[in-house]
Image 1 (tube, rainbow, N blue to C red):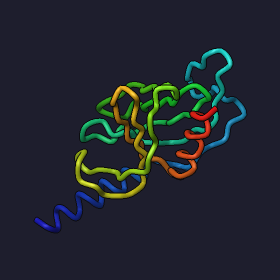
Image 2 (tube, helix red, strand yellow; image 1 turned 120 degrees about the vertical axis):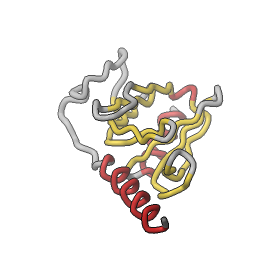
Image 3 (cartoon, rainbow, N blue to C red; image 1 turned 180 degrees about the vertical axis):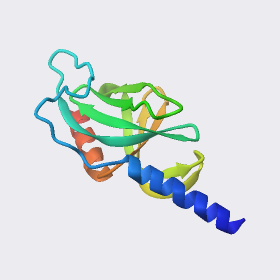
Image 4 (spheres, rainbow, N blue to C red; image 1 turned 90 degrees about the vertical axis):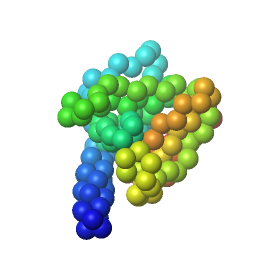
Amino acid sequence: MKKTLTIILFITVILSLNSCGTQKKSSKENSYNIELMENEKIIKKGFANIQRGIEQVGGKLYLTNERIIFKSHKFNFQSGNTEIKLENISSVNKSWTKFLGFIPLVPNSIKLSTKEGSKFRFVINGRSKWISAINKEIQQ
């Protein structure tokens, strides 16, 4: 039983970390098929997972000067985009990746809380840099 749990935890951590890649620079800011509003520009982008229930949904995370956009890739049970306007964010904090949505595994996530009370967890490489960039855009 203990060995099985260890294997499950190991696989979950590997899958979680594997979905998060390093940021790729592109000369075309909108080459990822996201629709930008007028005067909106991409500040930061990278591979990420969003916690939706017990599933870690893989995709790409974008920070613009107006909002945070998560665009899931097609290889998930749960797909779809998540958009959070920067003006609606009340806090951004370091967080833990959670196995089955409640068992803390790895401290490699950020948690966004909105003024309406919603919470979003993203597994992302360089979380301190993401938190700084988000806070900088919120303050502007």
